[in-house]
Image 1 (cartoon, one colour):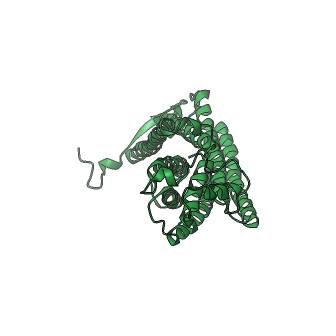
Image 2 (cartoon, one colour; image 1 turned 135 degrees about the vertical axis):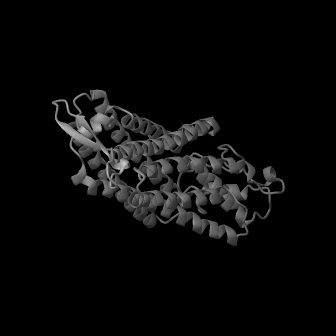
Image 3 (tube, helix red, strand yellow; image 1 turned 30 degrees about the vertical axis):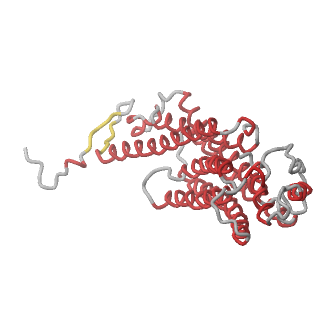
Length: 359
């Protein structure tokens, strides 16, 4: 039997029936799109899940025991833990009852159990919690890196940082509430696409702001070090490099959300930040032990993290690391070299700043 020259076997359709017997047609391209979308988004979330698990294991194994109680370590570990749970729940959602073939095409969710609704809402909740831990971590690190600035500049930066972080958290909270309501009422979020986009944009802006402040401050510090003749690659350079990639790479994924057909590219933004932050900490911490002056390192330079070092007491919390700090003057004066170089204080300050970050 001839079907004619205009027949396209790749676009033919088949008939399914709803529970009340009402027929409806589904085409092969629609099924292909459904399968492709499900595979792509599961691969996306699974890749984020694997990267987060590896980083969390590395962070637990390579961090010194005395550093595991610092705020930065706790925030980094919590962020990775939240991100792991979030991605597991997302994978469960797209392989669960909501994403079954008949349920999807018929729009019949009568047999979807309550646990599937809980998975969907909990995944959105952990995305919100992940953003909170990331914003707190970024605020803390910016506060540490700006500790040597004048009070007025620190207050301005802190005020703007708080406003930017709260704006991103506010949009994410609104999306959490409305998304949960739509899940429970089985309605589509088409009228709220603007809120989804605004949440992505405000989150990206907040990350860019924190990274820009961090990179700018480190850039000026590195310039001063070069003027003092310190050119070797050390912890400050590592933090600068990772800060730059945290400033650029998440923005790329945020833009790809609007320029590519791959689903949920913006979900990588929070994953990248939660990975880059502990990665920079571990890399910088590992370089501290090896980044020492060439000649008689232990005789000429104090230990960075010793509280009872004979070179000075670092427990002074007021203007820590500042040229007017008592700890700074005590360390410099106690140096065994009769004429300590200007680079000595800068090198010590890097260790103090890294210690305050929990590296």
